[in-house]
Image 1 (cartoon, rainbow, N blue to C red):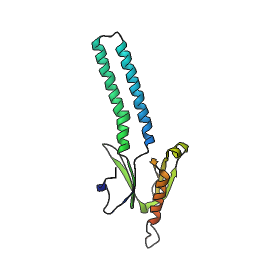
Image 2 (cartoon, rainbow, N blue to C red; image 1 turned 120 degrees about the vertical axis):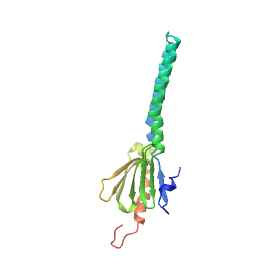
Image 3 (cartoon, rainbow, N blue to C red; image 1 turned 180 degrees about the vertical axis):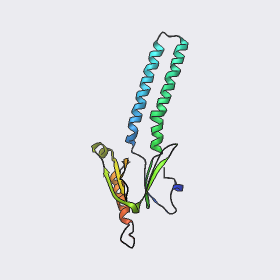
Length: 172
């Protein structure tokens, strides 16, 4: 999905648009399967018991309700968070937006960026992901985790920095 055009300035061009790497979804998916297995085991034990039909029905309702709440909290919420997290590099700025109901974000003008670094370990290298750290003028460095193809994004961002014209005093 393209980054929403209404969030860009006139004539601003998107160079890179990424969501977090899919590896950030592995723990929630595994947790969902664990919750589902535990709920299935509990239902099996409940229905094999000698309890009354009404007790088994109410027990089933309780187990399904707990499973549904757990599924929403530990699977649906992380999926939506992943879906609504955007890391965008345009020809003018770096944009980071996250959040489902309450949104937060940061914009860093390309001209204010001093350094761009990336880091990835062995697993991240195999999955072609990593962390991107951006240091802008007079701010602490910002780290963006789980950026897919982080080396390509780093190179593209550095290219954007080099293409930025200098002002009359030699500054960007």
